[in-house]
Length: 213
Image (cartoon, one colour):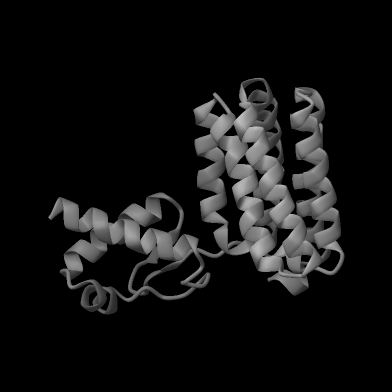
């Protein structure tokens, strides 16, 4: 039973993170029970686990739904993320391997191709890979885990800003500068550029919230 609960938990969590369920979308216990072929009690356990991770909200007599966030909550998240990602980048620079730097450069080239062809969702997916390499290189795993947990909670909003007109060119320039600083082994500059990058994402949300929400 424990393995069954874990399997359903991982599946439902991944679907929420990938955006297969929308913010505020209902998660009816009976439907999920039928879908996964498990008891409603198992589904209740899974939903409680997801509630603890702030991916789901559960209301008495109303059931569970995917957690949604207000603009102010998203801006608070991005303010914190700027600090965390700057710290992670500074810590990663002395530890990152030459192979990882080469991988960053290769991903940046792929991002350039998607940017040139206006394949913005593919650009965004590789953007995540770019950041993941920096996370992998960072020796402070606590900071990385905190950042990933925060990003998972806000997964539905993570790719939206790239769709704002003009943000794609700004984003590519920011990632190129971050890559150059990392390649040159300059932790202070890399940190400052990463903080500026996330701060610009935050500014884009603030200025375009009616479009993005």
